[in-house]
Image (cartoon, rainbow, N blue to C red; front, side, top):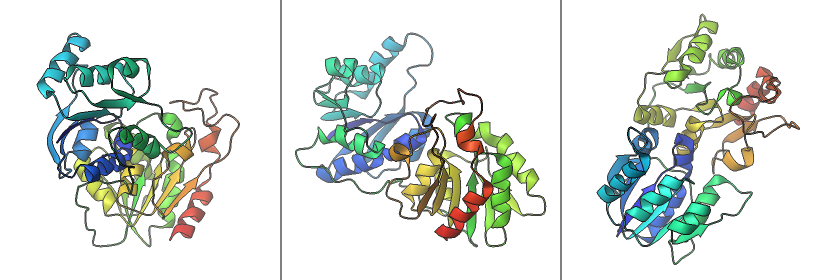
Amino acid sequence: MKLLVILPNWLGDAVMATPAIEALCSIYPDAELTLVGSFVSIEALKYHPQCTRHYVDETKKGGNRFLNTYRFAKELGSHDMAITFRNQLHSSLLLYWSGTSITAGRRSWHSTLLLKYAIKPAHPSHLVKQYRDIAQSLSPQPLSIGNLSIHIPLHRYLRPTLGINPGATYGSAKRWNSEKFAEVARTFSHQYDIILFGGPNEVGMANEIESALKGVKVTNLAGKTSISELCSFIGGLNLFITNDSGPMHVAAAYQVPTVAIFGPTRHLETSQWMNEKSIIVRHDMKCAPCMKRECPLGHHECMTTITAREVIEAVKNLI
């Protein structure tokens, strides 16, 4: 049985789709997965043992996107079933033009017109459950969802290791202060080796933390890892401190003890899934969750009012 899966674009969202994918694979153990997604989502999930083909969606690059989508759909070809975890016109068109007859996606005007099953997930609910609701339309049996999963072996460190992730690709509103991250890291530097993580656009924040940690041995990996290396290095950590971000969900997939700092986003919808060793640090604000990339009021108090002491106490409670 051939199953076409259109992954979410963001790393964290793609990882949160894995329980639904694994549930479908348990119903259809002979399924051969064709994965389509952004570069980061494919690099994280292409190692699934049932993935036989994987493609980075480049239909936005050059020329007419509708024509590019049509050509890409014909390259993918017909599958027995197909599902998209994106709520996007071009993903609905991709499934429709692939020639696959049994298709599913989140309900919208385009999915209602183009897909066999246009599903409205239960809301409010965690995004993992919303993805499960969409996938349920392809299964004759109730889908049972478990932990997040990434099929990349974790790295083995020689000493207890604490990872710090100060970035958040979505926008500055989700980022905590670099000096406060450094204060937390220094507090636990006698117990753990310190590793800094971050993407190419987050090198500056990691460098600020490294500079603030003079006298402390720090390994700065910001901008220096592939996606698979990032997952592996996070997977082997003993402790992780992070903003609401893709790496936060990677840590949940490996069940890494995590303190997550939340500001403008919906923590009940995108918190770590099924990680018992997870603590959220956040403040209730009248203006939150605003879900904005930058603070629309200019004060960013949902993050700036969170103190280093609060995060330090959360770490102590966790360990």
